[in-house]
Image (cartoon, rainbow, N blue to C red; front, side):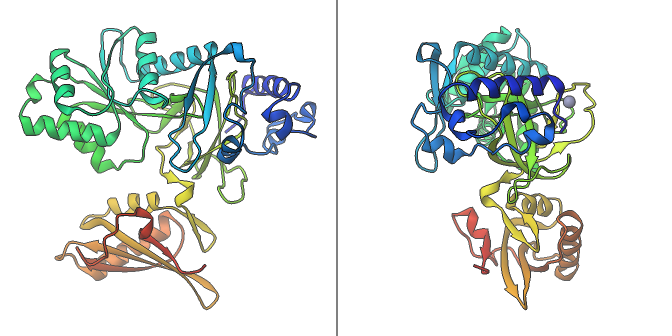
Length: 410
Ligand code: ZN
């Protein structure tokens, strides 16, 4: 993605500020002459900021303004060890609200809407972000927080909520509950704004048709404001990222080299105006691609694709990066295949070999199916593999999704 002149100006301004005062980036970029960064490729030589950098810093080690300017902190959920603390200035909070209100507008939501917010409130950035955006927009926020389905549904009917903000799994649960109770006629929902966890097309269609609403994917992460830095539009072809606040790059997760637009890799984000805890070339671990060209909706804000997975789940076979999300997507597009599969990777006669075992409906012609999957794999992911189709129930079940890929090479 081309780094625009205004973005470059904001980045340089920020780099100067961060390296001329004590703090995280003064140490990290020690010895780097900021004035020598003249082009996009110079910028692409700067070291990445990793989640581990944030974890290793003191709780407020990233803070880049005096204490009196900090108005709030948030913290990432910390599924892997120490949580990361992110301090916000008044301007950061305001900017976040502006971005979030823009997200609602992109989804066609306006001040007459009633927005039922089911993500959690607290240290986490989710609920409060949805709330900030709703208030900035001038809509009515209904700050439910998670759980208590009875109360959610009662409120949804009593308040005639028109917008549901939720994770995909909670949206599905509510949709099923509404169907089960036969109360669909009393529900006024028109739109759903769904947090950007990875979710399949099948689930999306189910939520959308059960509730009769249009769904939008919202993107964000606690380290960079929170949800609301990007959202999908009516055309559902990726999420627009607010280019006046964040600059996005896609890099090869293994080599760290920048990839051309359209290729899948790791999303790297640089904040352009953040004060409390700016981040330069922050590796999100999210796998996606920049979508080339302009969107049919006319917005100039660049788009990233729906998140395909996390780099932590990735593996490299025959020189090609493969992640479970790609395999999920590929298999979900083939009729007669169940969602269960297993991958075995080995090193045989000096070469990587991959065996993909999939479960299928018993009446399916297995040989034919194997040929189809093999050729789709070759054309979509780029390597030749061996495919084995077995009847449903033929593969071992595991709680852990990672057990789907068994790597015998190491
Ligand atoms: Zn668009």
